[in-house]
Length: 373
Length: 207
Ligand code: HEM
Image (cartoon, chains in turn blue, yellow):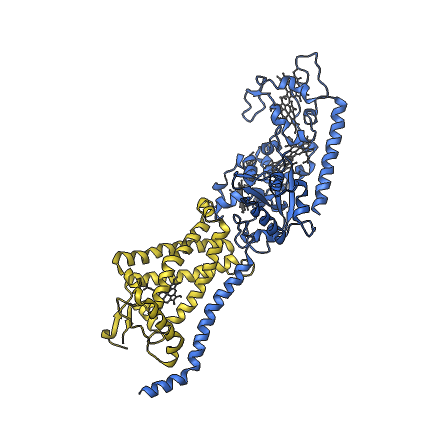
């Protein structure tokens, strides 16, 4: 299922890239041509295109390094794929393109996201005369790939730009803990698929392990991670396989703990944020069969910035190796319930036993007190 | 009823006050504790309410603990909890033999209560362990769970939130077990209700 969807996503991306690639090739407008002028930090223009409708100076500088790190550049999207109304550069003029360009339509390529966004509270603001653009949340020249981002990176990058969650959520116990470990959209877009991300944290180096750095410690190549760890070949790391892996790491003296977070999948449905639509029923998460912990993954970032997901059975969350993650009820350790039952039963049995013997020995006491009189 | 001369004043007001606040607090904590841990199968109240109630009552029990501690230490009465060491082991054996054998035969309780020495050595050691180690452990783990993010450093020093929670849960079961045995033992006074009455009025019937 999961690998299927990854494949189709990949194909979509390729198709997108292929279409746009041929499109831009036809125009043969290279990013470097734009950068001849737009790498100039002093390039500005006077513009009234702002909420105050005042004449303000707007910088036209584009940070090329940041653009080159963006998800769009990584997918072969060029300047003119977005600034699509520039069809050619007329080098004879001082200004080789129109002075005023059309607003960029993200929707051209991200129709699904736009559809989901239409239903959301952020779109509904239009009735109040405020238009929220796609790039109010995502930015535009440096849209990052978010799949490997931590909860706090995601929040800083998106929601916290405008909201202070401590001003709402009075009803929510342990707010700090929730905001540190649960992505805003996990609650606010309950339709969006979600994962529990498990990362190996290097206690000695105070960083997260990447696949290669972790695996090289036990003498395995990064690409052989699953082949080595998933010994029963069912595609997911189960509890026993996990314990084996941790033991191997321990034998090599590798001090690592697992950090877990609940994040939304990078999916268009993340946009469906509506008023009063958030998950408010604590017991949806905090119960042993919660659907929020179905998809658990080991997450590694690769040296090239890519992301590697390996499926993990949810029972791994019960392990004491995942000692920094515990969800009341949700990742309850079942063994403790059994031990508890024994503890309580012992108390009750001692009492019941004692009462029984006292009842049975009534004649003996009678005889005894008769004797002593 | 026996006259006042037969009565021994054993439980001063602060102890009685502490005790009944503590006992009712524990009942609520245990009820809400079950609701929190087994939210999928118990539906007494919403999880959110259970957590809020558990937190508030927990804080009351913590404050109340200091009534007990304050009373015993400020008056020096904590002495009643300090055993007579050389005789402790033989005394414990005698007391165990009484509960396990003598009581069935109709022997008198080897421990004679006085206001300076109100507990038999078994009670004394059990209560002392509970009040000095077990209840504080429950309180500290409870406070950590209440403000996970705020106490993150300490929690991590102790091995992580899962360890803290495991301790809290195991002690939770221990306290349930303790209360069952404790209530039963308190019916073993000179009459079924003698100890209970004493914990209400302060006076224990004396023989
Ligand atoms: C509904 C529950 C409870 C009942 C009915 C109850 C009853 C009693 C009674 C009758 C006594 C006096 C008998 C004696 O001296 O041994 C007593 C004493 C005591 N109980 Fe409880 N109890 C309850 C819950 C608890 C709990 C939850 C704790 C502690 C976590 C506790 C700790 C103690 C202690 C430490 C004493 C000795 C008090 C002192 O320092 O003088 N009890 N209890």
